[in-house]
Length: 117
Length: 242
Image (tube, rainbow over all chains, first blue to last red; front, side, top):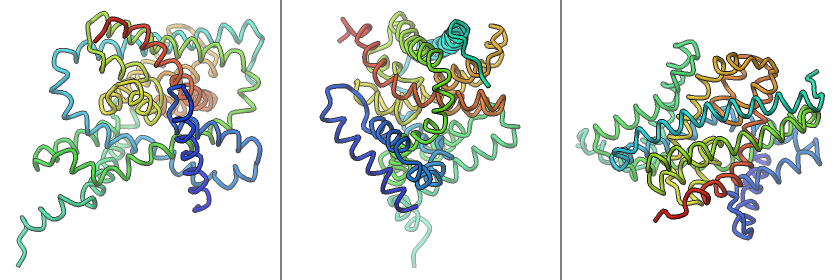
């Protein structure tokens, strides 16, 4: 577990370093994820090593969100009249994105003859 | 002789109390979610946030003091993002077989999520910080917060927008996709995971295992896509704003 944790933190560290060196606005942890994916593909032994720890962290993914969410309380006052506009933007864009992504997937799957098992 | 007020003033200044409170509030929210039959409307994160906000308000505790303890949980957002490589790795064989539909849906869905939210926000006159917080809201929490921080958004507002996007997607997905008469579980799952990240993925897993696997894939791929799409989409709408 300790080795897996060191591996995950090291990928994040390298990702953070790269993020500052690259001109693109990619967050360090995302770069760390891409690097770790490459490592997983190269070595199945590495996948077995990090699996329990990675699954442990991911099983409570939504908990990690709570501290930032609590911070919004001090924020509501500054939103004022924008709350309705923000709510409308969130709901409508979510419906549109699901519809567009699902229709595109199904359409291209039909064109390329891609079937599930 | 130490009275309660002294003990409270000692505990409320250290990280132990607020770290424990964060974990306890989330456990309470999760228990409510299970009791309500795992309906996406009862969201454990929203319950935990509401409970903690009420406690901080009643005890007149500043957010900075609370964050002293909560930062240990907040810190794990980064390692959790790196750990998303694992479900992505597990889906690689299925991804290879559905490469073109996945790529097309990723580009179309990621652009639609960011551009339509920004178009509505800009049309209704929200300010630049709010626009920058809206752009990455379909990405999973740690990624969306990281992107928002880099493009001038508010991390806390982004966190709430991400939760709202997740709940909206989890609630509307099944009736919406039935209305569109889509029966490909890969398409349904991928769209929900791409748009509504972890909350949508949890919902897709309840509906169908194939939908769940492709939702995890959609969530992971859109984490990368949004990092590129959100700044791009924002640059389209932020011209002329202060």
